[in-house]
Length: 129
Image 1 (cartoon, rainbow, N blue to C red):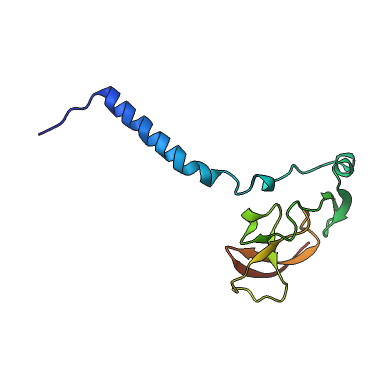
Image 2 (spheres, one colour):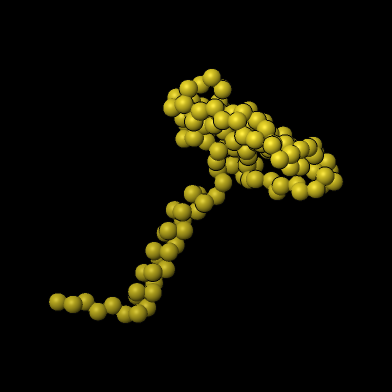
């Protein structure tokens, strides 16, 4: 026995499925904390200093960058998504160790050594130049 459904019934069913998907997916798409929304990169010395940053050269290529203190420096984290910049732990912590990290102090990561934390696990010491 075959049950016929009208076009409007199928259309209504599709809308219901879409609404349910949006309802459940919205929290996954939004930042965990609105204060952690990435600030725009300041690309000129004037904009940098006006925005409270320091214009400096970093890395092997000495490319000029704006360096600012992060809004969440030192806050506990489990990975980069929890921080404005990086989630890091003590340099001496062995890779593979389960840890609670802390948000990196600076927006600029070039010219620093750090032990990143990903999903609550230390990745290992890396120096970025």
